[in-house]
Amino acid sequence: MLHTLRLALLACLGLTLHATTLTSIGADDNGVGRRVTVLDTGTATATPLFDLNSLDSAFSGITYQASTNTYFAVRTDGFGNSTLASFTLAQNGVFSDVMALSTMGTQAFTGGLTYNAADSFFYALANDSNGDSELYRIDVGGNSITALTSQLGPGYTGGLTLNSADGNLYAIRNDELGVSSLEKFVISGNTATFSTVFDSFGMGFNGGLFANGSSFYALGSDMFGLGNLQNLDSAGALSGLFDTGYGFYNAGIAAGPDPVPEPATFGLAGAALIAVGIIRRKAGKS
Image (tube, rainbow, N blue to C red; front, side):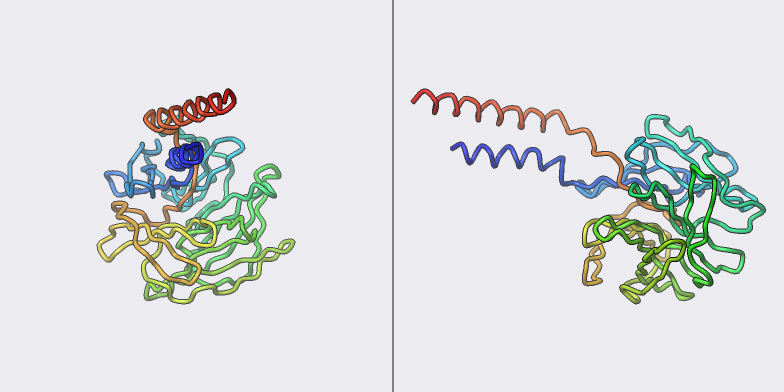
């Protein structure tokens, strides 16, 4: 009986501990990337939260910094200038500019953004006017940007993520036909070497990438622009999860704080704990 109740307690807690809640940025009513959206893989739903308050900019490449409970994204204005910006879910659309990344449209940091808590640096993929991509390290404290690649090539528009399991960066590259490949970056000092992990695993994956253990969440779009969150497993196979809505292009995917458990879940867990305590007391008296 005691063992059964323990299993029930773990099951109750597992309802909140094992579902992954992701955050992304989709298009607002005008088709501009400003709408912060929660992608819940547990319930297979996409829930818009709010629009970031900017009339002249689009946002992409979202990432999360757990130590400050803050999201970061790249704000790109109408002149092509990219700026690292921050916001929290509690601010309901208010954001703050953190650091200028490019001016006069020399580089558009729209290929992906991720944060590495181990070295406190951001990493981002930028594309120039010719479509050529490069990987950069962003040091906010030192107000500096360092190019880690040279002549990386075009097409890095599908997202960037840190895989905490191996400490390496991963990105999606799309060729001129829209065929998507998964690339790995290994950083040593101020140089990043890259290699192809999965060549031509799918098409149209321009929305974002997030490492989830040995697999990845990848956000793609169909020919009509409808987004779909998919799982890319360790063998390079895709499985569709759910539709996210329209406008998830260069959106990025981040895993934020664990959602607050539902009151019903607290009740179930509490009842299980009380039952375990009663049984232990009875066992002690016998």
